[in-house]
Length: 143
Image (tube, rainbow, N blue to C red; front, top):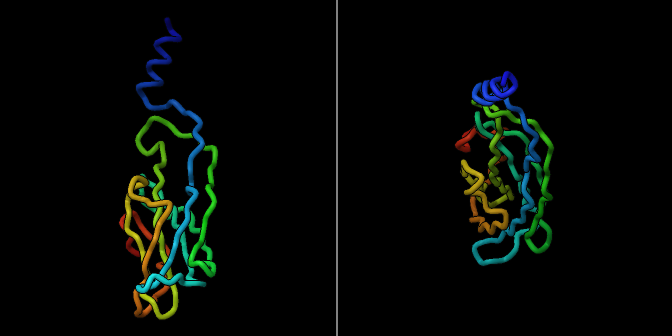
């Protein structure tokens, strides 16, 4: 009986810790083209991983597009422990930032993992390129 009361107390207090194999970065591919539909080679593509509860950037992986305008990113997972209390679990979401000289920089502003498109096609328009922000917060603004 005492063991049952202890288990219920721990459960209600949120002190239950459990392992989870968390996706830090999904497997993803991007195709970068110009307004005529031609692939853009050597565009710098960043896949930015952020997480709640605070919406802060956790990691950034970058690659250049190949002759076909494509770049790909491997899935990254990590075993973590989380708990059933407030701020005891991390929820990841991802955004793209694409930079190429003489083209406008493209940054997505998704704030949910459900919004993220792991097979993403983007058309860059001519214009002034700017570097990707050094760090993004949960709504895609520079910190």
